[in-house]
Image (cartoon, rainbow, N blue to C red; front, side, top):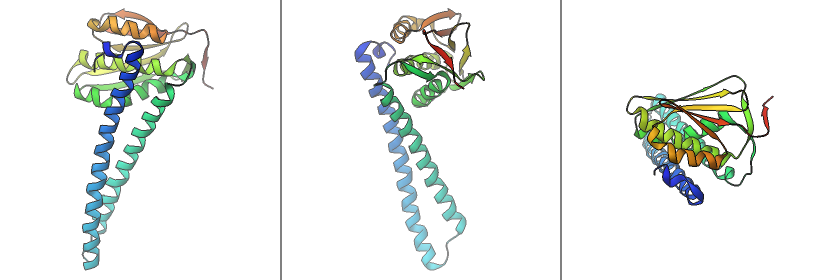
Length: 212
């Protein structure tokens, strides 16, 4: 997957397919770990019949299964939120939460760059009227470019801050990606500003409101 293939109407479908492929791959890993621990539970049941079962071993296995159930639940909730966002028109959206969702959706990809992602938000919990799906697509592209830009051991720092009008999202990207990111920004209705190795995305729709 590259940023250019995410642009245009076909890019919307490719973006969903890409995210779905990553999420379902992770979900298969979740099920494999649960299955492995279910087999271990069978062995522990045999030990219990012999009276040699350690309660700690049973508790540890239970914790591992519960952890994977929680992990799978998060994967499915994030994928479900992306799916619903595609059908939604422009609406009040928490920009910080959208950034967190974008990071979660592309976590496998940023991990492949061995880059860390950090989100910094101000205390205003910014919400504004945007088309959430297109914002997620733009943020995913910025995270991809940012991961490539900072490289192994680097940090992709996403900052969501209030601007004089609307809100601004800042992240490090490679200037080589600007044409495709600019196209995605236009499709999202956002304005871009380049400053050295950083990109600022200005979101300034007609209606901006703070979450109470």
